[in-house]
Length: 393
Ligand code: SAH
Image 1 (spheres, helix red, strand yellow):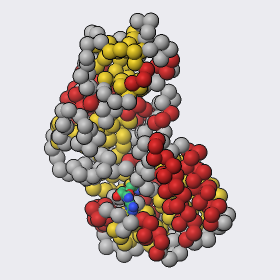
Image 2: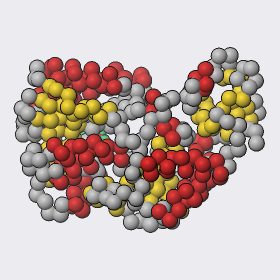
Image 3: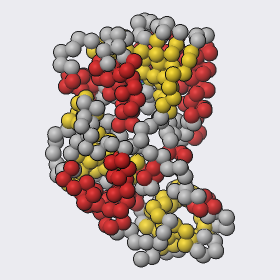
Image 4: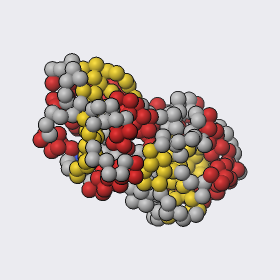
């Protein structure tokens, strides 16, 4: 099977020889046969040699590579890809785990599936396309997922309305398989409702699982502020860890409702927890210095490279407030999930904030995304989550 062809400019095959999964528009010499958004294309070097195949799209990233072999992208192809992704999750102990049924089974480029995310919540898979190509192939992908995961998956919910706003096809969210509304999943023994219909991302931030588990170890007897709580993930770990008090804050009233519901699922009637719908900066400005464990997990401050400077300023300001108010001997869990902010950028912003406070600050842990969000060694851009755990004297 051959597809329409994209020819590269001389020398532009170098990154593909190192298995980088994106081709930018500037690398393209010409395109044969006018492929449509999302169509499969074969990529050729200026020497007219086949080098890769992938999904074509209009924009700065013009081809998202799926394979470096000339092959047919059919149901069998998707089955092989998903089998490889599933095998990784099995090998890290996340499949059939006794107390956890929430994990990411496909992490885009990290699973050589640029543009595709699939998260598992108990018996439901939530599938998200970030490219028109994955959208066009969604039915085959869903079928392949059923074949690979068998009975362990009863529902497949497709959720790409927000990730594919510009796609011609105008994706609609909905079930591709099953239709159960039972939306309670478990993460290391803690239960939560997943709002896969309306929630952010696929409904829950699975990428913080291991970092939440770490927080649990530090929570005993502490007064905890979970800033940017969303569905309250860090809060219920803090409660299980024996926190004395937990305050969850998010500017979204819906997030606060979800947090309250989730806390109620795990710790009904527990008076240690209160959630507030408020802006982070306002809350940090007016709060007292009662907290000795603070979590700062803001949304991506920079979605594009141009926004980097402002983003770094945002991280600096936010962290400066925490350093100013956290109790002596306090622990700060601080994160950035902006892809364009590097580990060094983030560390410098937090370092500057610490220096402004004049306090002695030590790094206890350097955190990242968990193993079910693997990063392809050929695509370091895939490492987006950065965190520091700091001890503040
Ligand atoms: N820590 C969460 C994920 C955080 S996502 C978890 O473990 O699941 C970021 C959250 O920040 C979103 O819920 C969003 O509503 C909230 N948010 C965005 N801007 C905010 C602001 N200015 N003040 C407070 N919360 C904000």
